[in-house]
Length: 196
Ligand code: CU
Ligand code: ZN
Picture 1 (cartoon, rainbow, N blue to C red):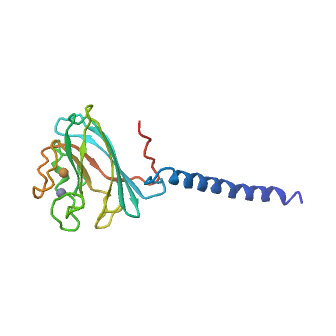
Picture 2 (picture 1 turned 90 degrees about the vertical axis):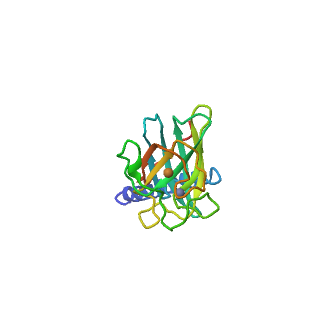
């Protein structure tokens, strides 16, 4: 018996740990309605300041059954102002004015517009800065995916504009200059930090 017991204990241990992890994962996924899990496909875009701004922040994109959940945390914006906010077609932030990111990501040949009406896949709700110039936003995008296919966001750019998006001027929303740019990169398994 003694020769058999140690392997048997090791085998039992190998099952206990994954079971415990699965339970923790399940609990985390259930903790908040609409919350996402680190096991969901995820990408992120750290922002770089552009056009002489002091904008900083990170945008997370998480694939869910009903679309892509976006969490945006941005600082250094103009206090109490709306800032146009889009996914752009090129993941290139090399230009000091952010123009290297190209036009709005538009995989389905739609006009520029708001959520709930015909819109570019990359059209997102404008960021709303508070009195401190900070913006926090969570919303869901349809028509795009966390991936690298035709509607995929990975490898695309994110732009924060100086002005509000009017959701009707074609093809830009007339949102002014580009004050931050980020490249969307795959970030599987990464955590979205708890709100500070
Ligand atoms: Cu834009
Ligand atoms: Zn657009």
